[in-house]
Image (tube, protein in one colour):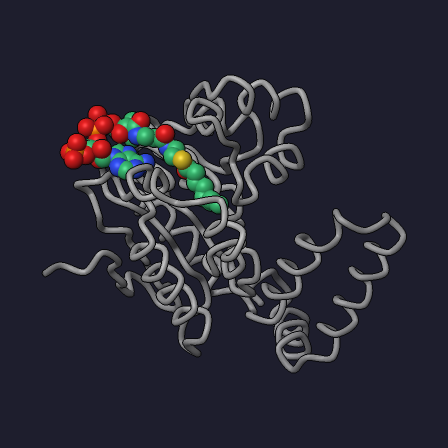
Length: 253
Ligand code: CO8
């Protein structure tokens, strides 16, 4: 039987994780969430992986929670579990996560994209948080991440109607960094490869300050930034690159 999550190495330092349950539009069954969580943790631990790319299949990135499974879940079970570890893993990755969206990113699928560091979408990608139409809300970070990214007016506009957004609309709202004219996965892998070629400690520090800073006061966030940069000044990589620049006299460091 084919695995519901596939992992490839399309470029140096890049792990490509693919959801592979196309017959259910990559709906997040318990088994798919377990497999995705395990694949992300493996990539996070692998010393030769610097950037993780996550994608789905051509029909859909992910149609969200598995409604057939969710229909049978009791409130007691929900309360006992609180949340699947996948959602914590997504929020705690130290390596950059680039999501490539082809087709639908709905419900929990859009929540994965909202938790990513960078989102590349194909022209035809469709985003949406239709939970309200099922009598629930986006409970895996969707309400809170959307309001932070897009502001209250635009977040409520989509949360309260469940209306879908095009890739371009998602880009205008700050949810997507790039709309790929051709192949979103190839564009995401190229972006990931260019980040993987950067000094890894600088990548890590930049991701951390951008992630943590907005939740702190500006003064605290600026102190966080200064300290992160000070730590980078202590690295051999910084010394080597600055020396190489000074010796060669141009931006080739
Ligand atoms: N759950 C279960 N099965 C699904 C889902 C889903 N979310 N989406 C699609 N499928 C299944 C369909 O039932 C169908 O199965 P079958 O062939 O057995 O009938 C198969 O996938 C193909 O689906 P379609 O024929 O509908 O395919 P289309 O390409 O025509 O349409 C869509 C694709 C637009 C994605 C459509 O299937 C759709 O609207 N799906 C539902 C989208 C949705 O409402 N998502 C929100 C789900 S709720 C959620 O995400 C909450 C998660 C919160 C997690 C944290 C909880 C604490």
